[in-house]
Image (cartoon, rainbow over all chains, first blue to last red; front, side):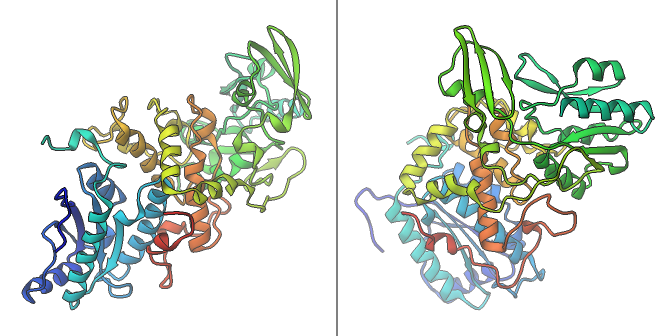
Length: 148
Length: 325
């Protein structure tokens, strides 16, 4: 693990769908694969449950990066949830980028229940990217920052 | 145009087809028109106007008006008919209670645009279709109409009426040259830092007056998220940059795929924030990613955020896109 000088640890929120990615995270755990503890997983019934406002709210409450994980397209437990989520997130991320929010702070990754290794690798990589970017300054709400 | 519209309104009122007329009348200033419901022939004769200053889109008023007793006559400009169609599609209007007359439009003069060009002390304005004569305290001056139109009209998307019961004048054509996305493209080509600066500069002017939400034909929810004190972004003066950003980001997303690009949000903004640039970004993205789609153009295509295909692009397309990091 890379430790940078000011000891900055990003706060990462990961929205994981109950059927694939959450099980994938579980598998990563049972396989003893390492991924940073900075990732806070929020279990959702389906990636389609992720309202774009959840992502903005996460940033408001101090997240430095938000990642959404769901079943691979075609594998959704509810047949079509992730297709809708995919369109929604594409547009939202494009808009965030348009408003000048660093595009590396948001990501969507499809992780199935059998891909524990992919889950760990994705999280490692994402945390590394966000750590390099530093704190989320552009989309922060100062009222929600903890006093240090 | 004025005479024809008044004549037709009076005829329809007289033969009992409609019992009210939704149109425009002079507002606080002669060049500042305001939507109005006329219930009698005398009122129509006295104060109904249709001229180059009639910017307001009347379609949203029909949500409430069409639920009242009797039929209402409404005058819609080409771009207003898109909003009208979109509202019909969302079952917000009772179509049987509405009689639509399509009126031609050659672009509406924006008083804000004229003021921003440095003309002060305006007491009145007249337009003859080519030039706008501005009466000021310091004498008259003339501005070309093409220079006096707001962003919504200078890059008009269509002169074609997509919904009407009858037309006054000739129907126009849809404009497909995509000139309306020029400013969006310019912004996309900037670096992320420049874009951030641009939007902070614009959005920090926001006073949360909610005019953009109240005028938007797509923003017609009866219970709005901004009225919910639990939402974290409820209506009140924005206290920090986050709320300024969020209000517009969320509002733009709520109308994504349903915004007909009528440009009312920018027209009514008292702070002159170019809000249409947010909506046009979504329209442009939807066109690029999921195929051309014009909200309100018809009544049966599925809205893009309500549909999907297996081969849709992945969200990672955003990271790979052009423009600077």
